[in-house]
Amino acid sequence: MSRTMRRIITICFTLVILLSMSSGVAASDTSWIIRGNYVMTWPSTDSYQTESVIGDNPLLNEFSLDSGQGFGFDLEYKMNPKLGLAVMAIFTDIEGTFVAGIEPGEQSDRVSDNNTVDTYTVNFGANYHFTPKSRADFYLGAFVGWWSYDSIKFQLPVLDQEVKIDLDDQFSYGLNAGIDVPFGSESSWIFTAALKYLVSDLKESGGPREIAIDPLIASIGIGYRF
Picture 1 (cartoon, one colour):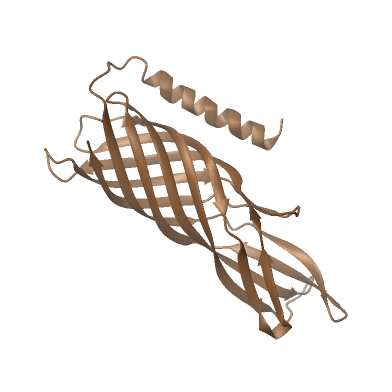
Picture 2 (cartoon, one colour; picture 1 turned 60 degrees about the horizontal axis):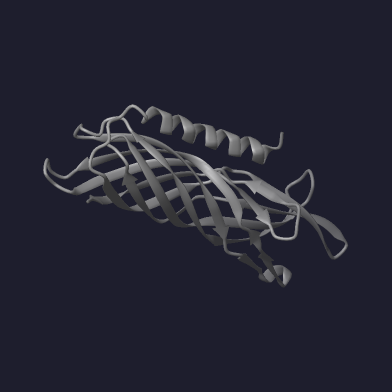
């Protein structure tokens, strides 16, 4: 069974569990929650290397990723007090580093540049609310979606080169844990915080090179219930 198929089966199984957990919950007046968040993104430390020739010297080039930041929106439809269906959009940049001149097996003169990859991801899923009647509403969820990446450019003036890497859009899925706390007992405004673990790859267009970025995405913001 392929890795992608295992991913799809895992996330579908999780969504089925969330739906079954809510089957015995009495329905109530439906409601909506909208959340706006500042987000921080920490991708995995994976990287890939390619080989090139500068002069007569074969050298290795390395592309890697680091943390980034951005903003996000969640819109959740509460079917009943415990189950909500959600759509999530996250817009973030991820810091990229390109290093040219890595000689195999030793430290050599290196030329590097940093730039950001602008990305967005849109996901659909379900949240299960464990404490909907409490002061702090804690929930867990699962989601599936799509992650889109812009191209990224690196300037290497010492080598008189510009490196451009085009990236393909990728399937994504993940898990979500969050908490909503109203500003007052009768307030519709809430403080919201969440942590998402998202599984996705960063793949070079037209090439075999691929990075499993699998980022953690932390968010903090304000929401409104209506």
